[in-house]
Picture 1 (tube, chains in turn red, blue):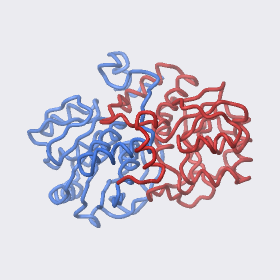
Picture 2 (tube, chains in turn green, orange):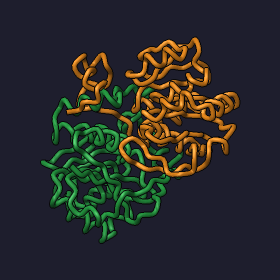
Picture 3 (tube, chains in turn red, purple):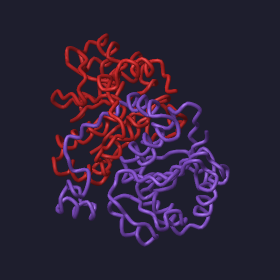
Picture 4 (cartoon, helix red, strand yellow):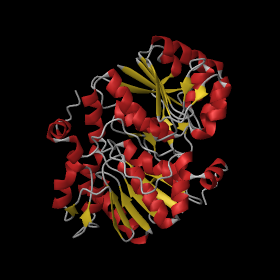
Length: 207
Length: 207
């Protein structure tokens, strides 16, 4: 089972690293990092990762997981990427996105008329692309799974494993990555964080 | 503020990617990936990442976060790494580990006589290194923060941000990475998963 995760400059790497750490443990699965070039990708924050293959080397993955980040936004208008996404989505058994990776699926026309989610700062763009944004952690439509921002990729991937393999495999992987979350604060969504924090984060003010 | 995260072959990348995604958002912080060589590191599952510097290029980081994975175990006996850890820990304002990164701190003598945590499969090794294992998500002793397995790095890093900066900065970062976890199952700790899943994961049987 070939799982393609695209990598691109200015991506948010945790969007991809969460699903990666879950999916590499699925029996028979192989995760391939699919680049727009074979050069190292420079993620948000400076981390550099190496693609394993070009997008076009993997025209028919079994699973596609599109991560997000600031670097995802220009891809909404990148015909090469959108055309690859359409092709891969047609043959893949499962298509998923994390965070603003949903915008790329939307740009490819895959979310037209559907409810969907993305990072909470990107609901307006998601709507412009024809979807109806909802604040769910994971939105499912048949073989399409759409996750919320960044850390939601872990929840999305465990859900995906339960659908494509079994609940018990998902539980075993949850135990292996000791995913028993205990956040020291309860500010992980706009509704819980409140208006002041929401306004600050929109301005990228973390002081 | 220089934050050093060591990278090494067969590391579990999510151990590091969780803290990274949190810490890059701290005002004035710079995360540096510190390698044993400058060659690409091959993580568990095949992901390849590039170090930014050698360990010895960063003798005095402000913050040290040691991740784990199968590749951490040989480092318990690697005098070069242990000597660097001892030096960095002496000058750093904050020292942290995720998962079996705790074993490396233990190997360097930093956990002698202290309660500590690690991935649940490594409690025995942690004990052999002089610490008393406890199943807490994050264990704190002054400027030393020790996290449980893999995904605990996110909880650890948010705790660290609240200590070294402010609760509000931690909350803003939690909102930015939309860390409002909603696991589809409740099997993230040995106590919750039960004996059968624990036995399977110990054998790396995810079928």
